[in-house]
Length: 331
Image (cartoon, rainbow, N blue to C red; front, side):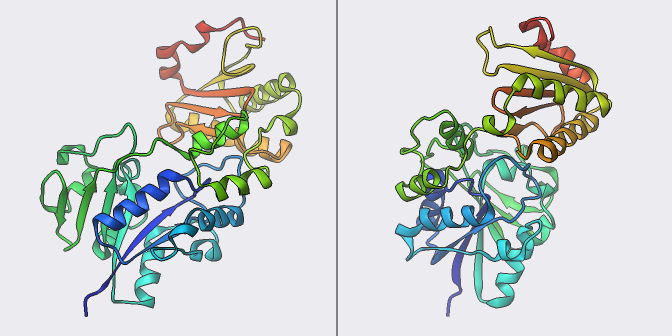
């Protein structure tokens, strides 16, 4: 008997949206999968915590978002039940232990493929599952091995622009989707500013988000953003932030009312400053950022608290961009 071809699609699903659904259904059709298991992560090792839903709510949104495709898609809660940091290799090995006859296809976006060598035991994953790399809006699929992470490049036996045969006996497939222009960040942002999300998520997911008042702005918890800006300034300065400055932008055309800028002496220091601030704000105000970007590289980290945005730079990069020259004198 032939093995049962099962796709594995993991993620935070914050929330589950039409982009996720498009990936799952399109890959299943292209590679003739018998089933796809959507696996919400408990705690992603490569993702920063932001203000949002609980693990139980993310699981429910994944179930709601896939409910019309139950014949194909099953939501697998094992990572949430296991708790702690979610590692894909553990999930795949557990599935194979339960049923050694499964033929696994791990589905990831192009953004994840570019950092796949940072995943725990990525070489083991590529020994027990095929990898299906899908396009993402604004990101081209690689047409040369030179665009791959070096550690994965070294595992390739033969390749062309559509697939690579690995020395492990498994295959990496590249699949161009009819991309759906949507991201979790966009959904959360639209909710916070009161815009419609009906074109971005299935109707039952939207109803769940609104009924549970998910992704509301942190404004109510923070209150006075002038005081909050001063608080962030002090936290960063006390932690060794270099040249910390706060700007009142309320009388300017800017995406926020206040901004705080600081520098770190290295990318690692800038990352440490950002992580420290996020922890302190959570402890004292009870909220996570609405969004955070750039922490992986540590060159320019943007921490979004709505009416306040904090910029933590590696000092060399700060001098290059000279962002504060666009603004008023510091408060």
